[in-house]
Amino acid sequence: MTPPEEQQQAEPKRSGAGYVPNLGPDPEVEKGNVFATLWGNLRDAFFPEKLPPLVLESKPVPVVDRMAVKRDPVSTGIAIVLHALVFLIIFIVGRKVIQTVTPQKTTTISMDVPPPVKMKQAAKSLQGGGGQRGAAPVSKGSPPPPSPNPIVPPSQPPKIQPQLAIPPAVNSVVNMNNPAMPNLGVANAPNVGVASMGNGKGSGLGSGNGNGVGPGSGGGTGGGPFQIGGDVSAPTLVYQPDPDYSEEARKAKFQGEVLVNLVVDAQGRPTRIKVLRHLGMGLDEKAVEAVAKYKFKPALKGGKPVPVELNVSVNFQIF
Image (tube, rainbow, N blue to C red; front, side, top):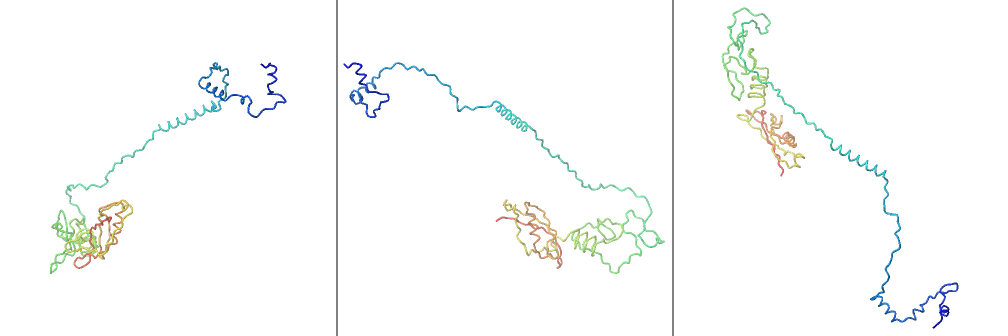
């Protein structure tokens, strides 16, 4: 056996000033057997050596959490108070009662004056008076016989009876009440004292213009133009343009008929145009504009053109 001194001398120096590390393969490993190394690895794999239990002697070191959020209690309190105030304001505004003003119901009172109540007139006492705005005082003579309701006033000089009596007449197309009165006039005229044919023009009775009865024009009875019928022919339409559609009615595809009343004068022109049956959506105005462009051949009465009143239907239809 080699003494320990020789073994110590045989071991190479692994440190010191003169130590040079060996960068090549370990000579001790090269000396070992390959089979011995393989056997040792298999033994460690299947039959490992039991080691003593591991005792943990280290202690955890407290470390500052880098992810922790630092909160200032003062700023947190201010934020809570502000949020509470906002929610309180929203709650108060939401509970505020909005008062809605309901329109007052208006009562419509008709101001039409009712017709006067017919009452029996009291008996009149005998009184004086009279005169017809003459230039001289009343002449001496016998007074006329008294009457409770005088109709024909006395006249001077007395009327001269014609040799050929021709009863007066007017152009009337309506059968009127013919009360037994000695003078000529209108049955419902307020003037019952002075004999007069009226303040109008022409040869008729009343305030109109023509040979009829009443305030109208032309002939016939009452006011207004002639009516179609009898010896009054209807006017002939010679030009009828199509009515225009309003933009509102065109978008809504609205259709219908407007009834228009008009007077065709003696020249065949439409006048006094008015709507009798309305349709709305701007079509009434379009109907009036279309009728105003109509051209007629005037109505005839006795071969002469006369104004007549008639109704015209204006049809609005989308094709």
